[in-house]
Image (cartoon, rainbow, N blue to C red; front, top):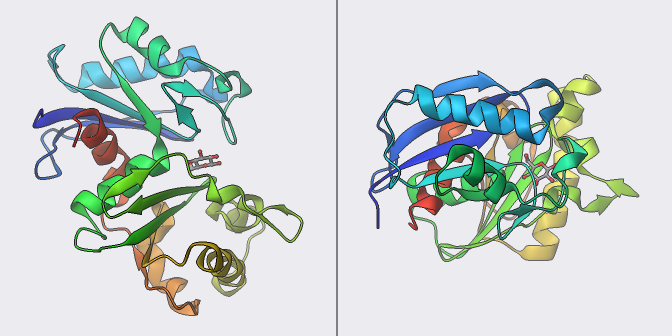
Amino acid sequence: MAHKAVGIDIGGTGIKGAVVDVSTGKLLTDRVKLPTPEGGEPQDIVDTVDRVIKKLGKISKREPVGVCFPAVVIKGRTLSAANVSKRWIGLEAESLFEKNLNRDIHFVNDADAAGYAETLYGAAESAKGLIIMTTLGTGIGTAIIYRGVLIPNAELGHIELEGGDYEAKASYAAKEREDLSWADWAARLQKYYSALEAYFHPDLFIVGGGVSKEYQDFLPLLTLDTPIVPATLRNNAGILGAAALAAGK
Ligand code: BGC
């Protein structure tokens, strides 16, 4: 297994990357970040990822490169596009990247990468059993990890509650859009996590996404049987998880 890999995290606003030591979860380079191109079209994103990798310095062709993206990814093909251009639906994303960047790429869902990283290096490092990672951002990303094994492409952000896709109500973007107070947003999160708890009975919830650094404003407002903790890897979780998965860790 490789010890060094590149992780790239494609998000709604930025595309971030770094070289990672996958045995320790430490970044070996500074983090490079470029804005996500307007419209999020596949070719524009590929070109930006290429620029991010070039800014990381000389990366040998043998070095694994993991890329995470906000969509269901099955065998390198993106099957959904909740908050990105619809052109990603059904796209052979992994081979598009491989062709353009002229190297092997490992393409995965963003929340899966972040959740897996938290179990390897972060908030769930020593946790056993069933872990559900949720990222609260533009959408709600989720990852299910059971005894260290990632069960990929869980799309629990889109569960139906109150007659609709609950991501639209409980994501951080919804809080911003509707200018919700912490208490009002927490009331929605309460419904959301209670539903996940009722369906899955996990041992631990981890809450990631940019807003998780303000966890004191909303996590104490939730009443759950399951422990719920903030992610510890913050903005680096996607990079670390994409690199680790690419390296076969
Ligand atoms: C997408 C997921 C993604 C999440 C976080 C959701 O809208 O459906 O695939 O993981 O947003 O980016």
